[in-house]
Length: 138
Image (cartoon, rainbow, N blue to C red; front, top):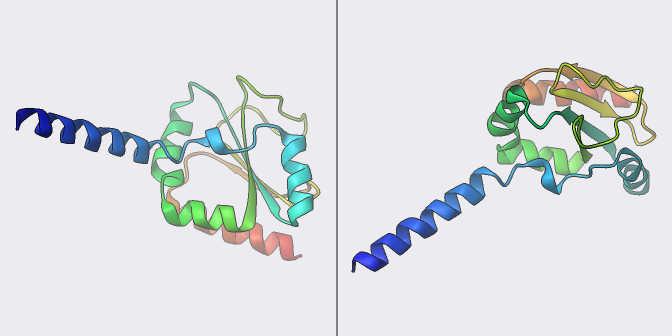
């Protein structure tokens, strides 16, 4: 009986850890040109998130905002998602690398529609998405 209880606790812990880290940017595109080609193929705008490996504010943004199912559903529906770490990925010179986290909303050709930086709560992030959508219509 004690073994079953320990096993259940272990499995629940693993499930929780998996859930908490499912928002990580590892499943995102990490090459700007690859993301741009996909956006053109799918006729989608691009959300480019620029961060850094040891950036505490990037981690907070991932935990508070990118962990929200509603945020990720909207992003996946409307955008090609690119994450570039200034520590590991090549960042085109037209984008600012410092002041992470950086958020760029681009059209399918890479034109910047809206840009901002900082930790955004989910509600604030939705406001930014709405602003980017309005800019893409003009």
